[in-house]
Image (tube, rainbow, N blue to C red):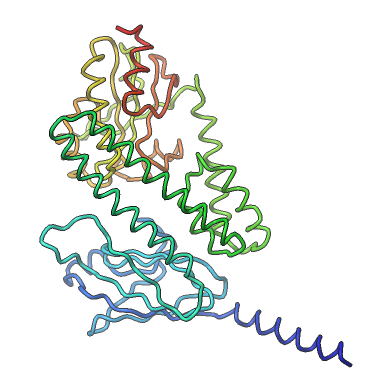
Length: 389
């Protein structure tokens, strides 16, 4: 009889747990403190999306109430991550599982000088579904403030042509990115059994942290076979492995034809003719580390162009005006091309470029002889290849 009672109680507990995991919807409410103009809202609506990327699938367009509040129902029968894009001013990724959420946003930046510096957004709830997300977002916010501060000093050092300080600040900038990945690892180790840990795994490079990521993703997929985000991470690593094979030393780089700033198509293989070495450089106007690298590339270009060195730059911009301005501001005289598809640039997709700056040094036949050369390492490599001339 005692065993029967215990079994019954356990059955009720299990049933309750299953019921808690099978909510059809959660409710997300909140307020946008500074809604933009109606014209801006029409052009850049408030949307619920599949992922926090520009062209992710849109599930719902959200209309604010007269008091600037909102309320939506989000499917949660299969727990998962969603993203809110708030009039292209604020963005947040959240977990839809057991908890109703309250998420307030700043909205339009009301400062006189608007900067790309989004505020920290806190996800409020009675439960812990988004606890990991909140903590990682706070870490990332603090890290980003540091990169902004370093970036300002980089600009001043570049303007004053202080190459030593520029290099030191560039190294500091890269350390910030590595530091965020190190912090994310700590969270992964502590939340390894929670499905939300996939959010932390996305703060790491599939290229550099492949083994670490797989050691946590595979058990997640086994434990939560419905967790599509874990499957997506594994798929990205598979793409990275395939891309690595394409960029082994001696591999021939694909021929690329994309329009320059005047709309004229430039062909990479044609560009290689008559040159000894060409650096294929993936960059973007909005990429601080890329802009910090440009003075080094320019220095090497000026020094070795007469000896057969050149650059073929592929921009991952999606706004032509920003691209053209950056080329002019950084005084880059070499070939510049872009299909203006952002991260979906066809060449970047082929080589699974998911972080910039990223570059490949090609010989006259288009074969890869070196890659990801930064700062002084680029000059050292070119000097070596051209016989130290």
